[in-house]
Length: 115
Length: 110
Image 1 (spheres, each protein chain N blue to C red):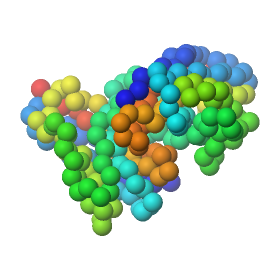
Image 2: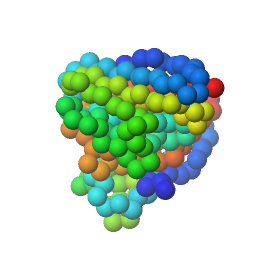
Image 3: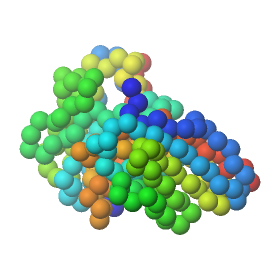
Image 4: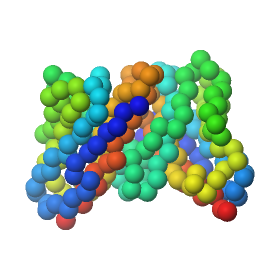
């Protein structure tokens, strides 16, 4: 398995500002992902963070709103840009790790509130 | 549009009872089916998973049953304990990307 940490754990931000969320994995991993989970709801994939190249975004998510970096095999950031109250959500990163190639582990999440 | 349909939305079970959660999918490209357990304020934790070439997988009190022809899979929690009270998500993977069900909140009454 993998131990994944995220910073910050929570934040309250003003409309129109941006927040960068950091994700650190305790071992090198091939693939990292970013998900969004609205309170009491399911998880939705935002994008795949590719090491050394641009992230791959899912339908409904764009790079200008959610720029992602992945400078190495253990670290990624997600920025939520020009925030609105609709961006209030929990943002989770995940990574493929473990003995089975398909196993995907999640960080604890970042709870974002936009006022 | 949810690619994985999960039911029930919630269930209550007595301590020692069996909890059963069902999921269905349409996309035959899915090739890996994990279940996650999530406690309030925490990230989802991988509980158990199955590949489509296997019909059943058991790990401790947790069992996945998989029916490829019906495109359905389910989680059985045997001898449910109060500590099992959590939200459970089924998921399906295509090209390592997970699509999640809506989640089931399980409450185990002592």
